[in-house]
Image 1 (tube, rainbow, N blue to C red):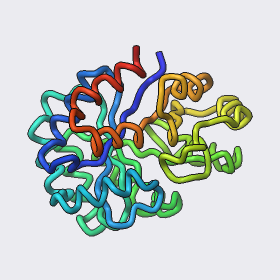
Image 2 (image 1 turned 120 degrees about the horizontal axis):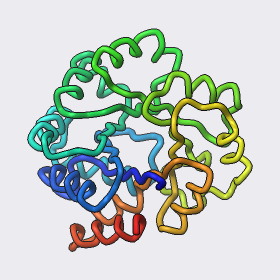
Image 3 (image 1 turned 45 degrees about the vertical axis):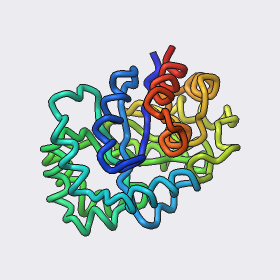
Image 4 (image 1 turned 90 degrees about the horizontal axis):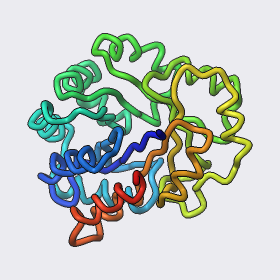
Length: 244
């Protein structure tokens, strides 16, 4: 069974909705979830998730608030929670303090797209291991085999294969480069491979997971939270439509 990872930005549609959304994602059958930590300059994200970051910050979401919310439901969540964000807010919080809070809040791992692997190895890897946190690196169709193997050696949890060199939610981002996925699948990787960016439907999900271990859906889910008045019902229906 291919794994489904659902992403959403913490603090939307309303500040206090985050715990409900986490439980909704779990109860709807997703295998893991990824929570975006709002940031004022989310460079890897397309317009929908950028809008979500802006709304979350306007609503008052902070890293401290997110940890408080996670702790409030820690004992009810059985699927892995991954925090995704940018390095500056994490460093402002204090890296070791951040990792300690992750550990105490039930977080399984981190994705920080703008943390260079050399910096990771030199300054951060040991702290993550100390707090038993996984770390996931991203690869693209342009990443060489040698580089993929290097990033896989540093990653734990899974390897995030971006379906194309674009921002999240790009209409053309759904993987059509079969060679890329075949190339990744042929490598002796230690981690499972999850495909992300541009998956909007069950057909997309099945297409991109033919040669991968799972898929990550973000923009399509965030769009429901931002724009649907009945987002709770529609979010459940959306996850069911992918999984069933």
